[in-house]
Length: 251
Image (tube, rainbow, N blue to C red; front, side, top):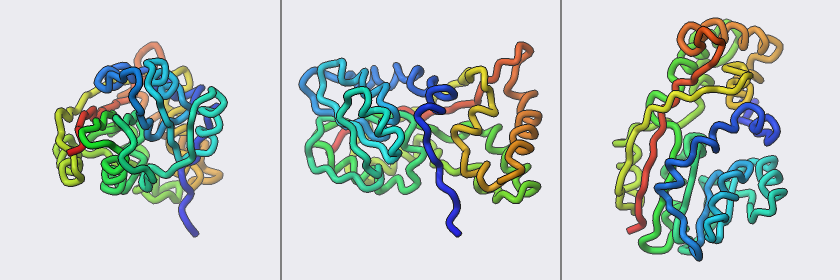
């Protein structure tokens, strides 16, 4: 039987993960969208950032692999399509490709890079941010440690692509890009009131599906294990986020 895949709910994302788009000012500044440009928003989610890019005067097309996210973004009046980021169908039609908090979900990164290169006009820029090496390391370690007790493969605690800047920069160069900058940014991130439980429920639902009836016990044990490192005296949770931010240009 195939392992369950991550399933997105726009409503759950709004409640537990709005910080993802709220903290994207730095990477959108690197993009610096201009009126009249045609921009592809790769992994656009519920369209909050797509809407901000369009407000610059650029013409923006959003793509995402989640039907629920596409529906939510379309409801905002945006031009959004259901597209697999590892199989982009575009040819030399964008001045820029932008992506935020999406590339770490795409586990064939060479296919993504090649598709982005095809989608860009010569000289077009590729700007984005996603999870980097050591992102949410505490959480991944805790969930891997307790997984066998709940019949879960420990590998389910790391379903992402979190490269170093050197590895990712080399991947871009191998797929037709000149890398202008690619840096690792530690970014401790305060979580909403739902804390680490809301985070796990939002971003790790395949792990919880594998745990089945034991999912509540997984959440309780993970919360207890992580509290000394990630929860302060006031009950505020801070996730140990580390991001890669990059800018590259199509050669």
